[in-house]
Image 1 (cartoon, rainbow, N blue to C red):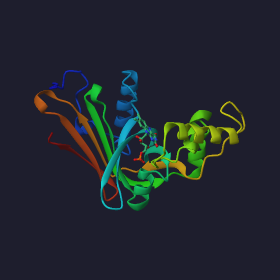
Image 2 (image 1 turned 60 degrees about the vertical axis):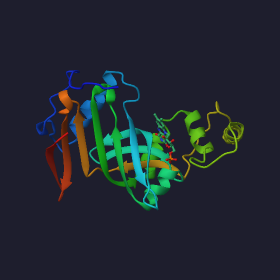
Image 3 (image 1 turned 30 degrees about the vertical axis):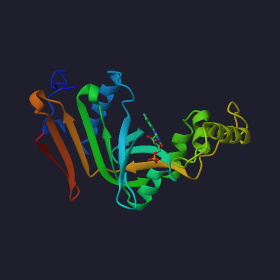
Image 4 (image 1 turned 90 degrees about the vertical axis):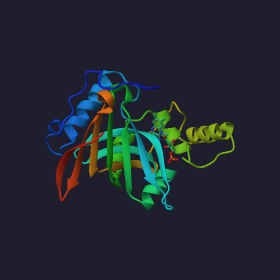
Length: 215
Ligand SMILES: Cc1cc2nc3c(=O)[nH]c(=O)nc-3n(C[C@H](O)[C@H](O)[C@H](O)COP(=O)(O)O)c2cc1C
């Protein structure tokens, strides 16, 4: 269970690796593309942490479905545990654990809902089965059995004209995108003898400050 890092030839992370505006975007997009090329599983999966009304943190994996100068976007149910936590404390962190690449990128910052237009644009790209599944699931609520869940899903599909129907399905009001607009982005690259490279970009008074951190 003890793995040595720094052997993959992907090193060379320094504060100068970050450039452009915002300073984290180019390198993040490059690392994501390298993860896709390396065919690591679900390279856009990220572990998102939120804090609930009692101050208790929770994490779960979601898929990042948008990256641009504003930040990173994921889609979920607004009435889910994470949705309710964000409504109370509109902040989150997100970590891309690219272990196979000996890399990690960490974001944190305020969270807002994306516009309904942006949500609708993404919703229409989803397969019909995924749209129906999102409507059928009262995410994070208990349900008596798998059979009850399938009955609920069949009921939603019936009312929408069937799983194979072609009538467009409206995006539900309680489903949409969240934007994490980072104030901190940290890149981590594994190095030999636990001397990993860490470079953190922090937004201070509207400017990105870049520093190397000790591992
Ligand atoms: C690889 C992977 C990707 C996932 N992607 C999403 C996603 O994009 N949106 C989502 O709502 N849940 C996604 N989930 C499920 C979440 O991890 C979680 O179980 C669900 O959103 C409920 O979380 P909550 O009760 O904390 O709100 C994914 C799970 C895995 C393992």
